[in-house]
Structures are given as structure tokens and as C-alpha cells.
Image 1: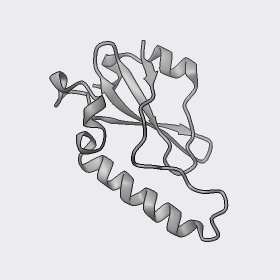
Image 2: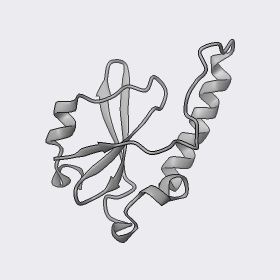
Image 3: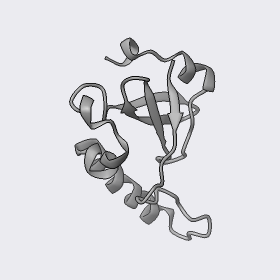
Image 4: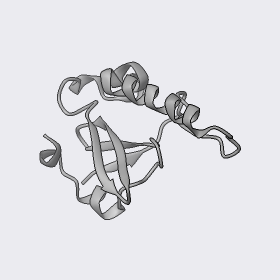
Length: 107
């Protein structure tokens, strides 16, 4: 069973609603996402379980939702804990899917 956690988000993934040019806002998000894919510990390491670094901790999970993906970052292996990444449309996976997620499913 997975838990979903939230941490203070110093990266500010939000796209302001009053934005006139969304392409610039999405460019900012794309840069953040590239940085996250390269080194998740640089962005959220202080909230992650460092003892299990190198296993599933730091892995990005993507679940198809609507016309995009719900993106989660594995923060801790035991108990399995993931954090929602509000990338692009900020889709979220179903609570039932997340509660049924096991460590063996993401290895």
C-alpha cells in the first residue's frame, strides 16, 4: 500500500492563471522536469529517504490520465511513499490505484 505525501514545493510548478503566454510557463515546467529526471535528490533530497537511495527512491512514476499523465516521485521505499508532481495539467492518479500500489509493482 502506498501513501501519498506532500512537501513544501520550493520549485513552484504552478502556472499562473493570468498568464498571457502559456508557452513560456510550460517551458519553465519543462526545465524543472528535466532537472527532476536528471537528479531528483537535488530537488527534493531533504524530504527523501537517503538510506535507500539508489533503489526505487527517486524513481518517477507516470500513470496515464485523460490526455496526459499523472506524475509521482518515490520518496520512501518502506512504507512506500510517493509525492505528486504537478507537471503540465497536474493530473492525479486515482486514490484506489495509489493505495493498491506495491513496491514490487515499481521495481
